[in-house]
Image 1 (cartoon, rainbow, N blue to C red):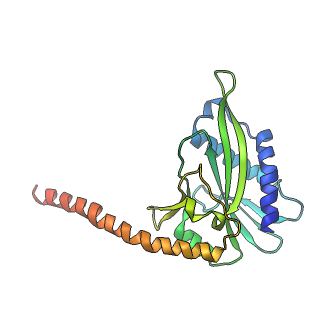
Image 2: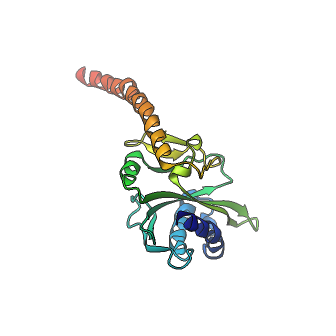
Image 3: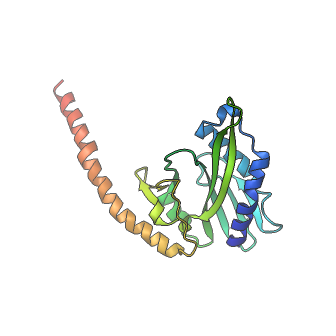
Length: 218
């Protein structure tokens, strides 16, 4: 069912955004404002992108801190969490967070769970010399395990955050298997954690040793 879901979203959501998502001109150059507006609009429009009887239980995430922005099931009992990301193609560099490594590991304990990344690309253009307009360029929808590790990295937040290293260079490998992808994640974390521990020992502990010394001598 995933292939049908992917096809429906990529085929229909772009046109719906172009026709229905209005970005105020004074907000067009504010990535956070655009991101929030596009995310909200996509969540509302997405439910009408699917062919009949393809998905059920479509829900918008209850809080901004949820792992997903929207979720739904398909008719075969597979469950989908969708993280919506926006990318202004005019910017030079973006490194968006995708999800916590621990949250993903727990979520993927169940084989029917699927974590998907919906990327909406847009460009801000100057229309009249005074007003800006957002043009939607492309919509891509992929399982996280179809994103190659060549374009991903791990950031030091909590247990670790999976990030896209550069939004201008997203590498998709549709043949990549979840097992192989998750094993690579574990391998990278095995290398990542010792480096973080060393940073803590050298920088944070060292820093507060100095603070401790100052306070002892007051």
